Length: 88
Length: 202
Image (cartoon, rainbow over all chains, first blue to last red; front, side, top):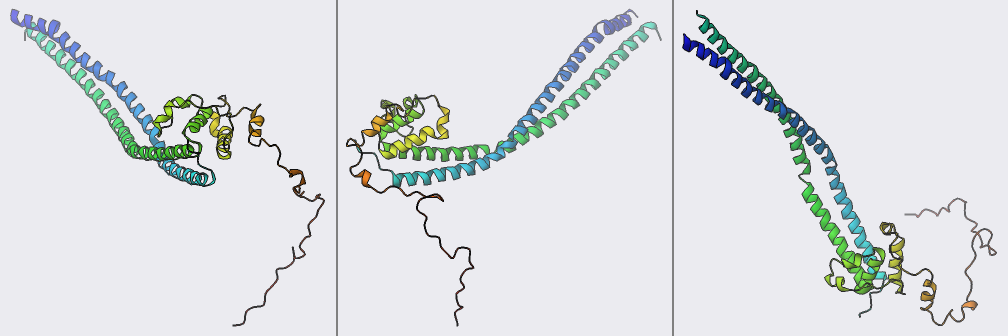
């Protein structure tokens, strides 16, 4: 009978607090991850929206092509109408 | 049942209840994490998809811009000469001569001349365009391309003999406009129906 009392006392005084502390630690850790995940999701969403303008790079590329072609044509005209520098 | 056994069972029940409560709460939090991670993965996938062509597009843009820079530098050096080209660039962007022209590494060793001298017509035109062009607005307080006070004397050096002989005898430019002293004859057919030519007979 004394052994049963000792076992019950150990369960109540030692095992139960340890189990509660360990499980509470796991629960707190899990709860602390949720805000971080929400923050990461919001950041990823914002980054994804920022990249919506990346499609405009295709337009920029075409405009750069046209601009460089215009510069080349203008430079070719200048090359014709302007004298070359005299050789040193 | 003895009191000791009842206390023992009570302890076990308490432990089980604690396990159930905390494990269920942890499962719920883990489900929230899974939902959040699904959102993250969806947005990261969007980022990857949207940024996939960026590298190629930017590389193409840079290649075209490099070609444009090379062409413009080559044209400037061809028309103004390397030394004066460095001077022109330094006049537009003070201090840029230290970096030199990209396709002409030897330009870094050139002491940029002051662009207040008299240049050929083409070079001066380029300089004037560059100075007054919007592209020069980036350095509006930079060194001037030509001295505005003594610029006329410098230009006068182009024609040391002064005004061309016989210039006064040349005919003056005509005065145009409704009040001009000389009114040119107006065509009579303006405003009338267009003449119809006879149809060709086949």
